Image (cartoon, rainbow over the protein chains, first blue to last red):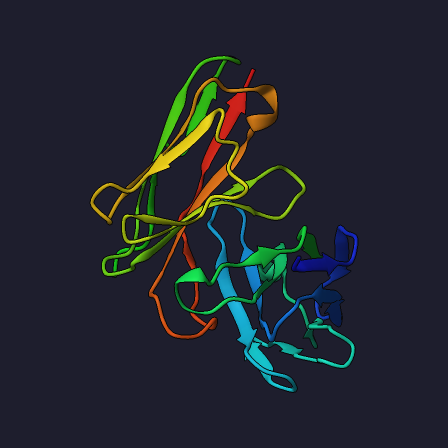
Length: 114
Length: 116
């Protein structure tokens, strides 16, 4: 079945540091890939997505590139801010239409120090 | 546009008691999901509805969990009787149904259940 593997956390960085969060996936078809973020006390919200190989999703300074050859979708940001402190989930969707659903990784907590 | 509404936000019960969670999706969203998020884990799909029909309930523990979406709008998830391992956040999400797999899921803030 489909699965998503995220690097172990938590991650603690200083403000303006470079961020990479690794994500790899296993899927039988041609999935769409997503990063969701959960800020403290809030619900999950979409950060970015990519729907086919070599696509790059980007939002709020975050980027991730869909790499079919390595089945990866690593999240990067050049300079993190304290406000980026949150839990980040990598996810995939491998079905179409009404059957479409998200399969999530375990999530990783990012803490950014001033 | 109003988001996905869930209630209650928090619930504490003793094991073997029952509990119900309610979800109102974004207006016009035909697809509704219930996910269970145990502390330290990613959300796991419990059940998926398309309008008032069940698309996938393969991971729903049907001996104790039930869910319905009678009029194809809001939905209720019930646990009876609850076990300690049911302590989790129950997330409701909705989506506009499209022909592909790229549609975004919109999540509510979740209902946190503690079973003592």
